[in-house]
Image (cartoon, rainbow, N blue to C red):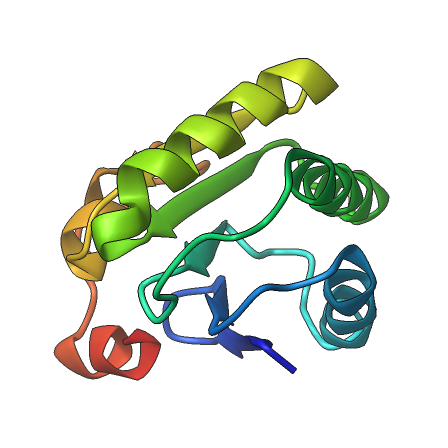
Length: 143
């Protein structure tokens, strides 16, 4: 499957890696599998598109995926979703699409773009106390 997901305890984040075109069904299947294992304290989700050579996903697929993520977040009683989009050369296109679609579906997103995970997470507007420090091992595990 071209989507891999894991929960990183040290950072309290969900980390999704996309390695190819992902269908809504694949995202739904992976999300259902992962959400059962993840505590409701997750502070952020990383969408990592950096391994994709091209972002060949239709508008409808992305909208369906964002709606699914929003529904999961509401079911988990998370107040807001925070996303770091790590996309390398795809970043501008991916962020534009996700930002536009999140407005369409009324989702609440805080989106940051960076290829430096530690720097991006440290500056995100996460709930609770400010996030200022991550261990090198935790950041390496996420990458």
